Length: 357
Image (cartoon, rainbow, N blue to C red; front, top):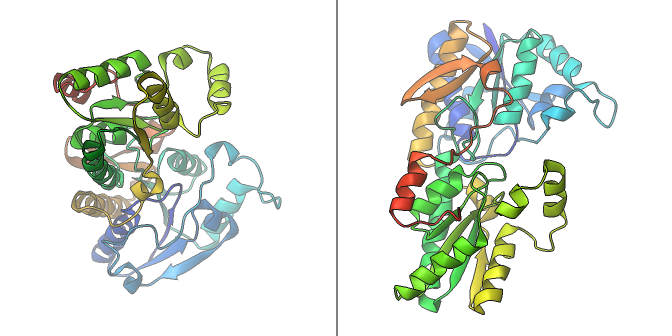
């Protein structure tokens, strides 16, 4: 009988349960009987041997359930070679617990950092399959990650709600969308929500260009402006600084976040009614949308097929609408950024959306 370990690592998202369900149902149909051990709270569970033997009923009724039934935690890859606070050597402990349970494979649902650790375990000789989870859609090698579209839906709904109140009160609204290093959610939700200005980490902005966009709308007789800002958006001035100095400037900012800084500058210039909205962790929460349930089921089935074929050390990905797999080593440590010349940006500019560049 096959013995499979499973864990969810890093930030939560809406389709973790749907993906685990896909893996479990795929394994059941391919093998008949299988033992699945769910490690609790991500890699912590694997390190400390905290797990539960899953029953078929554990995977029933979770297709539409957000969060993760196994719990999760963040454990940065750069800390993996360091012992825990109580002196446990992380990698040796994980290998020990994997072998103690006599696992045939470990399935890791996680984003960039989680898959780097998955690749490390694969290099240490464990059979590992990765599944691409992150609302940021920044995992290199896959066109889409599960959780991304659901997060975009939440962010877009937020923009929709802000739109009507902004119009009613003739306000400028700065909406801060999740995304420290990449701007996929902000780009998609900004376009879908009809934003007038979209500011991304990959496209440093000139605040004067933002002013120009506001002035243009005012001259056209439009009573409000919607500005969507990714958490990690930075000005051209800050972007020119050396990395260390740039981090120091951001850390010492008197504003809670970039959205508040931009709002303050707009208020100072126009003396206008400016508001900030931060949907925050709502973007991770709630039920997965139909598309995420669809791709999660496909990803899970592919993972089961890889286990059946004993084709380990792979990350399940979506490429050109097809679910396939690539070596974990090919993706580990790489981020998928929004390119400045991305077709979506070009088309958004044709629509008149300002990117501050």
